[in-house]
Image 1 (cartoon, helix red, strand yellow):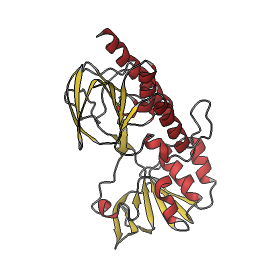
Image 2 (cartoon, one colour):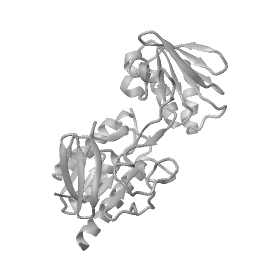
Image 3 (cartoon, helix red, strand yellow):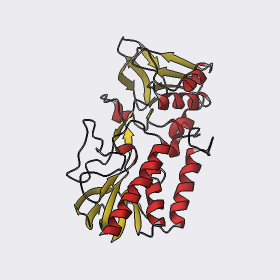
Image 4 (cartoon, one colour):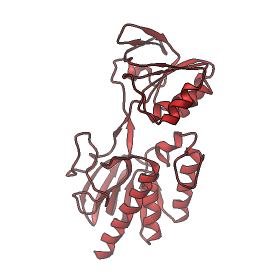
Length: 297
């Protein structure tokens, strides 16, 4: 029986683990992939206080080490469902069942997909959702990034150092990214912007070879990096939570859900700003709330 079970090993989850363990609680982090979360894919973090230019990998590894040094348990299994109440939540995975008195959901988000017919067929064969993960496979090639936000422009700037040509394709005429990112991308000789353009089909034999746009134009590329936003993950692991229209868990800044003993932290929570610093804050608040509840029981 764990005092606090945290579902998700990203920034919010690891911060919660550190705070919970420092309060003397028995804490477990459930993670199905890699500890550190999506920030591991970032080549450089420039907006986290006191740690300018740190890589996402170094940031995630440092958080993990800090949690491990506090004897936090790491369970590398995918959680398939949770039932129970405060004092005994039963967490099911592919390998068994675990019990915890309180629960912190810090599952984060997953990439939003295009929803095109051939998308799944070309995943890993030219279609990717992470430039730092897969960009090196396309060194010296022509690639495209789909999206106009911060992530898309980060991806484009990263790929410009790897690929011969990078096309940034955006559905609207306006880019939503930070102006500094846009300026940086526009200063690159090998980045071209195609605005007011929508991808409607993906063509190729064994690998992606061509993008078809809504206006009929075709673009030959070796890879497409999709960066059109993210959707919540794990919000339906336990029944009874209030969700907004997009599937995010409704909770105020205290990170408390409507279910006693269940807290939510990080990008999964309804809020205006989803950044590392707010994920860390959520993790600290959620863990502190869980500790207070345990101490009163």
